[in-house]
Amino acid sequence: METKLNKTLLEQGLELPLMEEFYTIQGEGFHTGKPAYFIRVGGCDVGCHWCDVKESWDASLHPLTSADIIVENAAKFPGKAVVVTGGEPSMYNMDYITKQFIRKGIQTFIETSGAYHLTGIWDWVCLSPKKTSPPLKENYTKANELKIIIHNKNDFEWAEQNAQFVNKDCSLFLQPEWSKSKEMMPLIVDYVMANPKWNVSLQTHKYMNIP
Image 1 (cartoon, helix red, strand yellow):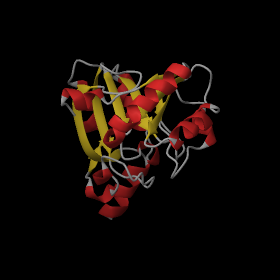
Image 2 (image 1 turned 180 degrees about the horizontal axis):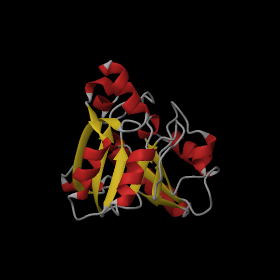
Image 3 (image 1 turned 90 degrees about the vertical axis):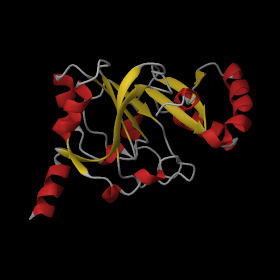
Image 4 (image 1 turned 45 degrees about the vertical axis):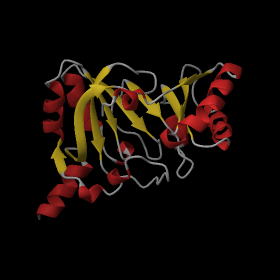
């Protein structure tokens, strides 16, 4: 009975498999440098080999947590923005929790591969497509920001393929995969200078030694 109840609460988005939550500075992409409350949900089947949070993949390892509690925790901090990431947050029903954030006057940002139907009400959608499980076509038009991780030279072509599908107001970013940053950064710099529709994104939180 308890298992069925938990499944129902999960399906309704009243509970989420919470891996971690913390208040910090947004380290990458369009909102770099801004304070935000990060909510990392567990569960992902996209399977990026270079993923730096593989411990998030198995949702069963992370406790189902009340969405109301998550909202209350976020509301305690002065920065009124939340970043929902993962794992892969589009696997879950985000309708309820985003409505509660909005009621608290908190902006809602999501970082997603776009591999699943996107639920919830979002002030900002960061779409970061992965080759192993590309985004649904419907999610490209919802993206405010397209962030492509550059792990090798072929990823520049992947970036251009994805850029064809987003709207004209979408901000475009190329970000080096952390373990290849020294190797890829010169290539990214040259590419952005030659293709100025793109911007460089860095994982500045790693330089600041913050989560």
